[in-house]
Amino acid sequence: RDPDATGRVPVDTRIRAVTANFADLAGVLTDPDTRRWIDDPPDGDPGGNHVVGVLFDLGVSSHQLDVARRGFSYRASGPLDMRMGADAARTAADIVNGSDRGELVGILRRFGEERFAGRIADAIIRHRPLDDTTGLAAVVAGAVPAAARRAGHPARRVFQAIRIAVNGELDAIAAGLDAAIAAVDPSGRIVVIAYHSLEDRIVKRRFARGAKGCVCLPEFPVCICDATQELRLLTRRPLRPSLEETSRNPRARSALLRAAERMTA
Image (cartoon, rainbow, N blue to C red; front, side, top):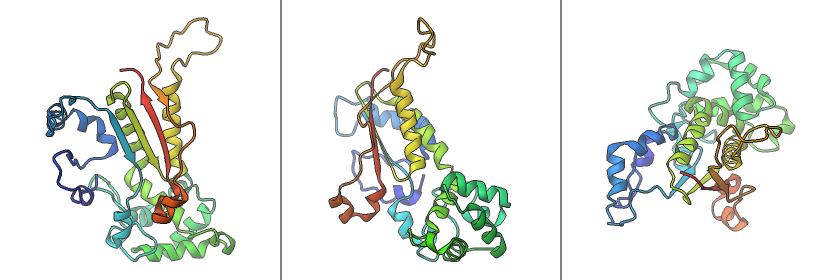
């Protein structure tokens, strides 16, 4: 969904870059141009016309964090933007400066699991209008107790929450997973890398539901739901990066990888 990301894709006939939201995956896969590319692959592979795997790398990218003008980082001064693409209706500034206390508290609790949501919302309202990332980060830091600041930057969860609200990330993940499961061929793989508990919880529950099959109550003598098992879990628990990997790439330290195999068409 980020034109900056698709613009950085290397030129390679095996790759077709599409600017779209995870929620748009079903439409992307049925788009005539995409279908032609899948059905008649440029490398001449006769095994074309199949989707054998889907990889989701969720959340904000390193490029987005490193470009201050995008407004994703609390460590660098930039505008309160946080939009991953032009499809986002509101900016971070719209939410920070235009939301009432109830909406702010709800966003911080739901999308950031922030235990000081009320104190932070009150501080934001007192200091509005806020128009840059470091200004918001300073307000958040001043709103939480000193003990909480020792566990890491206090603005981390706040920025996560606002970013998720701006981009509708959690709903997009759910829709993207449904589309991937529907599109992947039997024996194909769906792999998801999440970076925080909210993302991982959506993946865990969707995979568990797909691996369950029948959802009838235990007391029913025969199945009447006609549900079939869609997935076989390949990871009972999420895989985490090794110490070697996190030493090379510290941003990978929170990564959680889950994988499943498609069982039925």
